[in-house]
Length: 264
Image: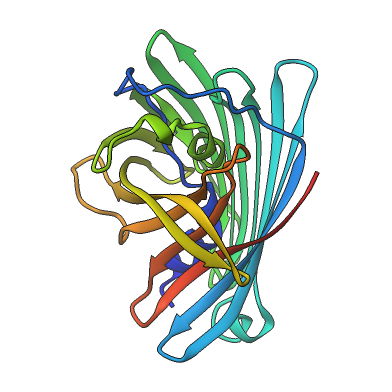
């Protein structure tokens, strides 16, 4: 499994979209609840359908107009033999606007270590993130440190806050085939995320059928080149708007993330 695709699959529930470029799309009345949501990451190839890992997202509203988010992802024991992943994402996000205030990613992937911290400032329509990076590849003897700055005009989020934008968007008022775009910051780079609304479809999760909003994600770099294969997500049409399934391709087979439960 290629590293960037597997790790993105473990974060796939966080992928999202905002509506700055399409003001006519309402964000609706959905508010962030206190909750813990879990997912199973499954590897599918022909008749093979094996659990490859788990994802857990904890959301805690605060009294100061923001909420805290914590995501942890890990590969299963059998997958660890091929490529071990232990990822943690932490964030502080504004409750009203869903814009990130702070983002932290701690990753242990295949013997490599990386720790990214982003702090945000905004001036008008421009978002700037100061980024500090500490990383150590498996072959390195010491941890390397660097700093960088990302800047973008328009709606700008990160991989953790995007999970909540995905649920906030008012799909009921979108037309099939409609697209919107948003900037996404990570520790390494700035990407452009375009979301395509595919309409309402019924999917089956744990032997139950659910009507869902089907969306497709495309990630591109600043020069317009795709940085990964397209990914698909299905979000429940219920008021909770929980992402129930996300699917991404691998060189051989595919990764699918299935919702397994919520604790309030």
